[in-house]
Amino acid sequence: MTKKSVRNPQVLLVFEPVLSDNTSLERSFAKELLTIGASLSARVNLPLNGLLLTSEQVGEEARDAFYSDCQASGMQELMEIGICENAGVGSWVEALSCAVRETSPELILFASSAFSSYAAAVLAGELGAKVHTETTRWQIHDQRHLYLERHVLAGSVCVKELAGTLGERVDAKAPILAVLSRSLLLEEPSLLEEKAEDRLQIVRSKWEKEGKTIQLISREPLLRQDVRLEEASIVVAGGRGLGGPEGFKLLKELAELLGGEVAASKQAVNLGWISAEHQVGQTGAKIRADLYIACGISGSIQHKAGIRGAKCIVAINTDPKAAIFQVADYGVVADIYDVVPAMIKKLKKQSRR
Ligand SMILES: Cc1cc2nc3c(=O)[nH]c(=O)nc-3n(C[C@H](O)[C@H](O)[C@H](O)COP(=O)(O)OP(=O)(O)OC[C@H]3O[C@@H](n4cnc5c(N)ncnc54)[C@H](O)[C@@H]3O)c2cc1C
Image 1 (tube, rainbow, N blue to C red):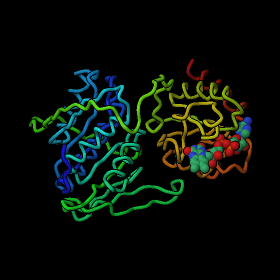
Image 2 (image 1 turned 90 degrees about the vertical axis):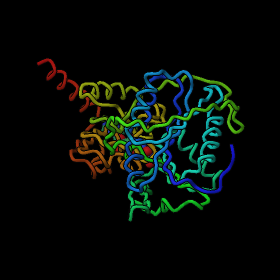
Image 3 (image 1 turned 135 degrees about the vertical axis):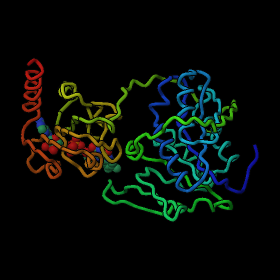
């Protein structure tokens, strides 16, 4: 593959690598990324292309569903690069970097994930570009100026900046790289509709080199539950006030009765009482639940950064001065071990009726 010094006027969507299971395409915000890519590229009148790293293990059904979503988004070309699962993330990022250098897009969009944060950072280093991380909003002014927004200082300040001018970047040294936050991805309703016209071209290639930067030494299964706190309508969260991991069994029971998910403060995660994907806050999930119940959580600024989107906040805390009460719609000054079992009892009684 050869290097090009000019940018191609196109928007490139980089999808999360899909290696084996049939569901990962759905779970990795591919549809949401396509929806945003489709509306953004239409606003600036640039072609939309995609790049997918994938392995042979992925089933036909999952592929076909993804291709029809790509087609519905108006995508023109999908580069599908076959990768070896065992080659490791270093090799996949090298494949991605090589394809990006070859196509020289003006704008590259990723959906927020551990892989995309790493890949975007590596690409930015190689291409001398800036990465716009955790983008919460995008705007186009005068059909070509792209403005991106993100929240800083634990979500208390919103920064809006001109990322670049699209359609005029043919001589630009570096593309614009943006990682879209989960909250932005979830905000965009999936508006993809079946299109009769088949414009999508799929260009397949293979990447078989071993990664130079990161190599796979061993593989251990990660015992994680499939938690998507951002999408839950009811979230019951516990903090250090629970006093130990057993408290989460109680919260799980309450969450199940309410049809919700269990979440936690960073302190509870750090203490090893619950796994990290349950964390809410600045460095965790940003929820948009209809109901958020905070149990034994003090309400630090970092925690509050994750619950701003909740419609109704209920706080249970023994300390009447706890900061969580400043943002709570309903506050209960009491011990959670008195309140939560009483709630469970009441809900069970109601469900028996
Ligand atoms: C860079 C950075 C990023 C961070 N990111 C996050 C983040 O994403 N999410 C996050 O949560 N934190 C984050 N933190 C940590 C944050 O600053 C706080 O330390 C943390 O939120 C506190 O967790 P907590 O409320 O569970 O514990 P504590 O602050 O110790 O509060 C425990 C609360 O439980 C109450 N309590 C005790 N016993 C009971 C009982 N029996 N019944 C009822 N109430 C009781 C107490 O009154 C107290 O208010 C971050 C910090 C930094 C520096």
